[in-house]
Length: 522
Image (cartoon, rainbow, N blue to C red; front, side, top):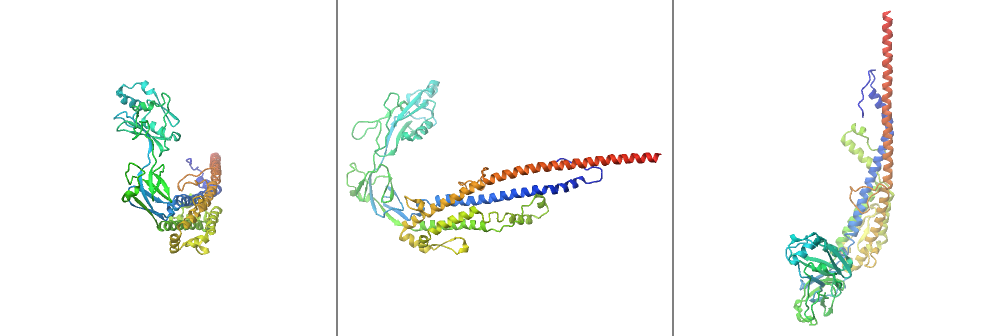
């Protein structure tokens, strides 16, 4: 604001202009208050968005919706516990199993002879080639750095320059899904190793056969031949299937992790060391691992209790927001109004001004309605496992009879799991998925109206400007800017008018003084 100096007419021009501008500023104050209410409302929506995202993503999907959260079945390994790990799925059949492992599955592998010591994954291909050939690294030339090295494996061709780092070579090969191999490097020996991504007899490391196809391997001193127990040496050590006997039945899975009778087994070591895998593993019963299935309802109960608590907490927030009292006589305070009030009064006034901004909001009412609809359509099954709703004035709150729930989980854990998580083929039939779908629709509505992020619960995240409320705020800002410019112009005009008036009065006073002086002289 420019510095103003009052005139010499005796009038307090600043006070007069301020009084005139106070009346003119009323429309601007109202516009700023409307903008503030819109911003408060948007922040209220963002809080709701945060709670909906948290409930949907962090609770229904990531916490309660995962298979282990509702799985009351546990696989207990006894005997040779080092040989296998076991994890029961919800569909585990309950069959006890005795397991003997005579062979672990391996991957097809190709190794180079090794360029030697002194190399790291930070070394270049030219340095590896120099080390392998006994040439000092200091003797590497620009031609060595620009030399091309090729590798063709499983139909995929890779070309690298001598200046390429070993770490880059590995990441390039490993990121190519079609090559179906994993590259690794042993700094102790300078060996480059290629292994099939799949284990068992189906894993392959097939090299190209044309001249120059595998010069990359030459940089690491060429291929280390593998000599099998029977037969000639080969470039690639073939992968083998696992050999495992379960309750006397021989299985040859291509991986060390597989599922039998609803139990996922991971083979870790052999239980019997025999040269001929056809030898009856029953001769070494003492080394077998045993798997038994038990039912522990506590995990399922804890999951459902947590869900009920989180569900009740969410609908409580929604019910509070749509029924909160709205005090329309309490508009946001202007800066001038705040200067005349105590801090406590400002706090109390602002609390009432912010109250009820989402009262009877359609998005919140629809979110509540659809969530309660999911619950009400399943109420028959829910009541049979101990979950009922409270009185009508409690707004859809769920009540849990833990004793009844425990009995239901103990009697038929699969039925309880499918009620909440659906079946393997139709997870969308479960309560968790249905609720997540309904909440997702509400998040879409919020994103469209408010500009919130349907995937983030961050209360400080920015809004998308192209939402309904974003456009409204743009309009408010434009109108406020225009109105502020007009008020500044009006204020300048008032001062100019008062200055002109003072100039005229000054001239009139001067003329009157001269006239009186001339009359006195005569």
